[in-house]
Length: 70
Image (tube, rainbow, N blue to C red; front, side, top):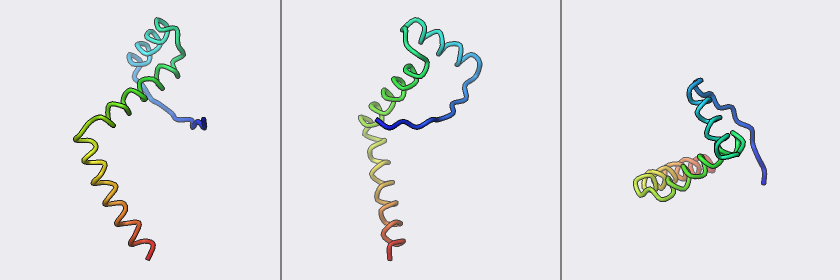
């Protein structure tokens, strides 16, 4: 698995809560963040409204890319 580094800015309260949750779950903060992101992505994939917007975006970008290729 290839990984990429990202910077995440949290409020002090968010950081403290995240650290506390990670501690209780006996996981690293990074693992807690990865799990939260995976859950969010799965939810978006199952969201019908999001899928409609995604398909519309794919079509728009496909048209733009096809014009650029000419």
